[in-house]
Image (cartoon, rainbow, N blue to C red; front, side, top):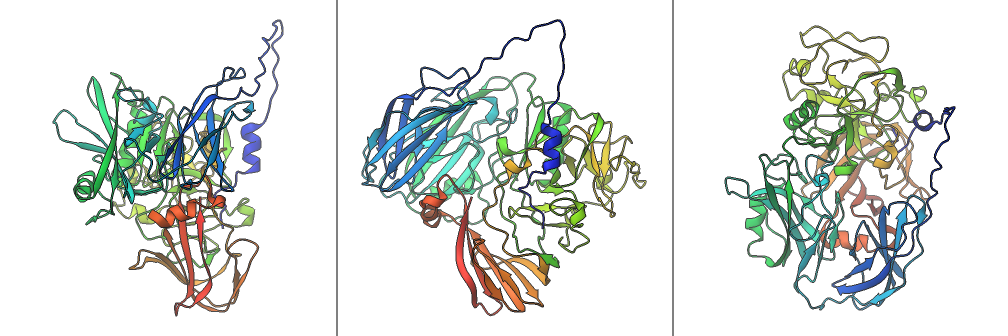
Amino acid sequence: MKNAATVLTCLLLVACGGGSSSNSGSTPTPTPTATVPGAPTGVTATAANASASVAFTAPASNGGASITGYTASCTGGGATRTATGTASPLSVTSLTNGTAYACTVTAANSAGTSAASTSATVTPTAGNSGSFTLTSAAGVEGASMAADYTCDGTGSSPQLTWSNPPAGTTEFAVLMTTLPGDGTTKWNWVMSGIPAATRSLAKDSFGLGTPGVGSDGPFVGYQPPCSQGPGAKVYTFTVYALSGSPALSTTPATGAALTTAMSSLTLGTATLNLSFSRATTPTGSTTACGYVRTAIAASAGASVSCDATYAYVSSNSIATHTMMDGITATNLQIPVQQNFLGANGWKIPLAPAIAASTTAAVDGPIGIAVNGVMIFNPCKQGGCTNGDTKVLGELDVCNGHAGRADDYHYHAAPTCLMATKAANYWDTHPLGWALDGFAIFGYNNADGTVATRDSTCGGNTTAVSNAPAGYSYHVTDASPYVLACFRGTPSPDLAGQGSKYSPFRQPPVTPFKVSNMTLTTASDGYSVLQFTSGISFTTTETGTDSYANTAGTYRVRYKQLTGSALSTQLALTANSNKSACWSFQFTDSNANTTQPAISYCR
């Protein structure tokens, strides 16, 4: 099956290959050599419930290069917990109350990491006194937040840290609200089910709570502010300490529904107000940005932010249509949410142009569909010499499957997505965007004629609607199905694709033939991948164990962990700095266990 986490060597050689040039008649200015920064100073650690807030002063010397981040480490009870960020303080979580910790801080720049600071001792306690407070690296109370957290940047959700929650808190919820001109509350961020042991959310937070839908829905997750009109808009971040889990009648929750459900459970709140003044001509207001935003909004599977260079498409790469049904050759990877959020969203160039030479597209992602699901080329890992995934039976009825990072993606025309609209809709509306910024349309040109495909990359220069001019790709039912190469210059995500994926387990089995594969949801909330094998096969959980299975029908059950179950997993040393976990169970058709249950985290 496809390895979504692998960066092709050949692509990296093209993208990162060196070159030489000469500049006769001039003497180049020597480039200063950066060294690692000095150690941070003035470190203090303030105790909280199962956490510590570590404050510090930036080092006197940055080593001749800008400091890119800090890491706070607290060691005690035989375990070390860490937290990273770009400013003081840092909140180190998952500590054990009553245990003494020694906390240090290091600084990093392009040359490397500094020596550790002198240590500060702290002993977390559930009874720690003090007011329930909320801070953020995005700014202090009343400050203006950067465009990076809005639709005129990457659309990242801000980092949040809170301390001293009320006694009896069993979980947290977060709301980001604003009051537009009509005076009615608008929600940009709705998050519930955050474990009680949590004291911070990282920038582009992933996995630590259950996201809801904001007022600019129906996208589920952080909706970066995209305010209209002049003047500063104030955005209020509120953390709710709750005595129990809100009873929500529908999911995903809206801001109004969550507010109502929390009313009798709220033990206390901590707030932070930040503002943003949008420019008269916003950075992300270009026509090209509008094309991507309009196409994505019509499908509702992702959100879009734009700076002057790229559209950043944020999604979890999970389709709302049927997934995995009908696959006949599999390695039993399953589709789970991916962290393609904010700064980790996929970059689509806003000014695509035909390049002097083409770029190969022989492995990995080539674009993103308007529902936020990635589109890959048709080949197996390592290139098409290893086979065409569709021909081999590895794709479901929608032309998608789960890859080595347990990520769902398409390898051919996304037929189930396309079925949500009239067939001719995709003649004039993009079904996706290639990583070089050109749009991907349906089978036909805008006039309804079958799209011609040039011998270069499989697209054409025919005039298109709702997308940049110059070139466009069109899907077909013949390999390579979408595009053979990139006619424009791809974004850095092509070469850097590996950094976007985070596999959490070994491939569970060598690919083998199956039948009757389906993916359903059970009454207990578990997703159930069921299949029948006509032969014996061997599976693994860790890569060093093995489990023999005879011919028959089997089920892989999995569910994302929340609340105390998530906290328990994240407290393990092996899961330090991870934020999302899934529980797996393995049975036959009679519910007999075929291998031990296990949890995987990323």
